[in-house]
Image 1: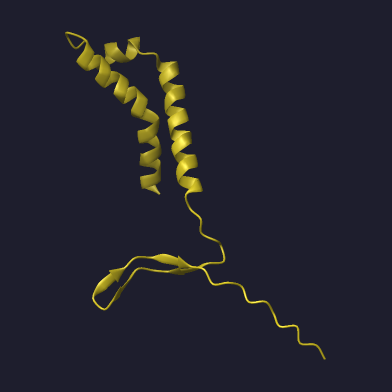
Image 2 (image 1 turned 120 degrees about the vertical axis):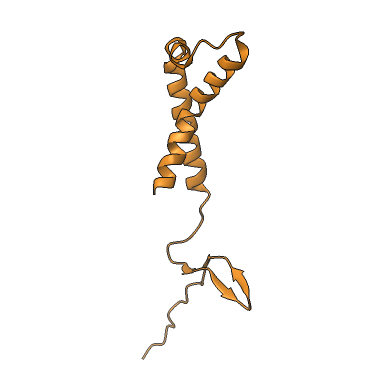
Length: 100
């Protein structure tokens, strides 16, 4: 859970970090972090970070295609090799229509 929070905070702050790095390397003399942030377009950086975070959330949430009825098989060692975890889809069997 903490990994998910850290990833979201990272993508949210990424535009601000890139702006600070860009200012640091584009100016002849580094004005300092607080001066750079006080002159930064924080509203634009906020919306850029929010859009980037939302985009990554949508991208990663739509990438999972597991059916809730699939069986989860955890990682295991088979013949000395590590088999990754996976979901196994077993087709539903229709009940036979045997009547009286």
